[in-house]
Image 1: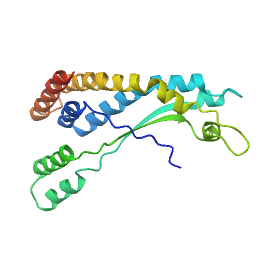
Image 2: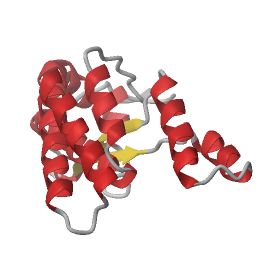
Image 3: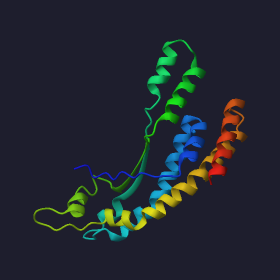
Length: 190
């Protein structure tokens, strides 16, 4: 049993394109901060609904965001092996990522396993104990709020990151230019 819920969203294309204009590490951090903010209403509702035998379960519910994007790595490597240089390799990777329809962000909302290893027994029940769901009802109650936060916060985070890049003395002009494009795209999407 997987235990994962896959959500398909719409209306994020422009924000995704804006995110692609930012440097990789910046984009990753923007996405992590956004996912963590968006998950907070679900986490707090799950805490409210969690069965309270000892209180350990309630205290162990966390939010964690992982960003992984392997799309474009093969194109980047092929361009480097062909001797096209880092700039061309980055363009090849970005083009592959723009063409990709899949997502590369995951958010985890649930208990820390060592502290509350029994959480899935409560959520789904066992042969001897009925289910006492708390995570799925929290998701059902707050998913629209979480998606709304994600949409608004992603644009705000992209704009804030672009401003930080623009003020940085360490960033080259081409990165600053791409960040300004990202900010404009995010503003138009919002």
